[in-house]
Amino acid sequence: MLPVLNRSWALFLGMFMLMVGNGLQGTLLGLRGDQEGFSTFALSIVMSGYFVGFLFSSKVTPELIRRVGHVRVFAALGSTISAVLIMYPVLVEPWAWTVGRIIIGFCFCGVYITAESWLNDASSNETRGKALSIYMMVQMVGIVFAQYIVSQGDVGGFTLFIIPSILVSMAFAPILLSIRPTPQFAQTKPLSIKRLIKASPLGCMGMFLLGGVFASQFGMSAVYGSQVGLTVGQISLFVSAIYIAALVAQYPIGWASDKIDRRILILWISMIGGAGSLIAFFIPGNFTIILISAAILGGTSNPLYALLIAYTNDYLEREDMAAASGGVLFINGLGAIAGPLIVGTMMEKLGANAFWLFAGVLMFLVGFYAMYRMTRRSRADQEFEQTTYTAVSAATSAVLVEVAQEIFVEEEIAEEKEANDSAV
Image (cartoon, rainbow, N blue to C red; front, side):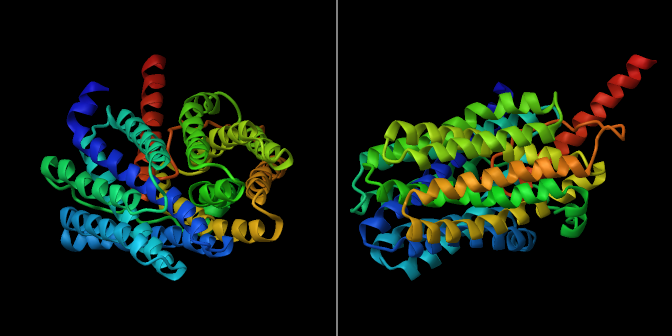
């Protein structure tokens, strides 16, 4: 662990500040928009914009990197993020915020792709798994710390918008001043969506539905909290509970996924997440219940993301695993774009508590579809060996998901070599 930190501390520090900035603007826009009188549906469009930009950037940024290089892309996107963050309190209009969110989503995805390429290049086969774990922890801690900052400031002022702008600007200094030779960027040729769905219908459907869950968590949780009358401090605790539980639950669920049939685990985790969401739906207005539901939803939906990737890999050939990363994130991104729009409409029609109904229904749908797929594909009829689970956060680009795929392959090859050596 220490060698990984020693080699990549600047990258981790920079990404921490970037995640604080990203976590701040997501929560802050929900709170300020509600304070400014934006309708729930208008805010849902604003929040959806981030995922439109993110999905578009996943296709465009690799080509930009190949044309002008990592450093120029990184610096250009970072300065754009900083400028947009300052624009929000100056131009308080739903259309302007929507455009800003699209631009910020595009830029953050590009920043992630660039930084994660550097992280992959700085890691060896032996340290890549540890680097991935530290990176995921840095992301989660950054988002949680952002909620603390929100609770200490004035949502109606300028300061809370200036802070993330400063943090984003400062984040690039340690990274750009310490990065060693720029890595060659070679994007893997993607696996077609049709082949991906054919290989793992459950993996693809699950990722699409989870996209909606993540988008509602990241974009609409502050809107929900504001509309049910929570204080800014309570909203910060509520959002933090989602991500803290996600971090804590990731590893025990990962351990279990390597021991039992993943479809059974997907089924139970989804059902627990759905039931946890409905607790707050049926018992509204109790802050303790809200925190419990947030922890259950976050502690199930986020590990489920990595679990579905591992499950999809179970049905892919080794040479297709890295190629599948782009398709998996594209499917997840489509769900993420639709998520805020649907939950925003539901909250306008049924009230703010529809936030929990939406998340609960999607989690139950993942579980029911897993149950259905268990009747369509039997593992008893074939020799089946599961790939290794690797923790991956939903707030990553295709680059890091591809790195996780490579770890799957490397560990599988190592296990085969060890088995062969034992046999000899």
